Length: 74
Image 1: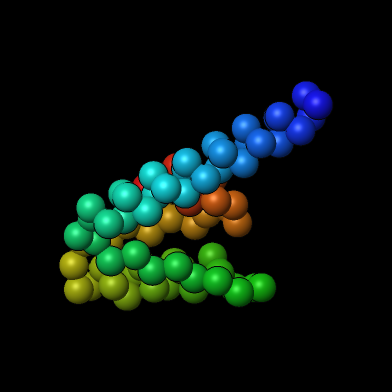
Image 2: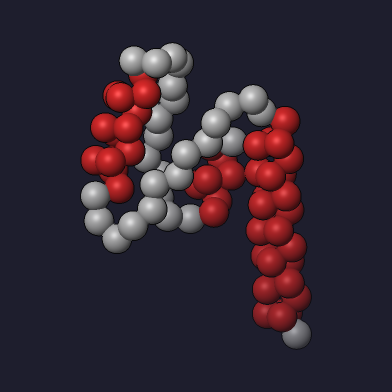
């Protein structure tokens, strides 16, 4: 029973984090770009950051592939 309650709590926590991330993006005037794929993500994200820096302020960060790391960035 405790394991099931723990799973429910973790699921609710993750849903809350996702909700917070969506609200933060909705309030922001920034443009968010996500780079996905099986290889070369770090290089592509770094290059994209350098290219876009010539057009204005940018913030580039390479993340782990988890929702928790994405939410912490926002």
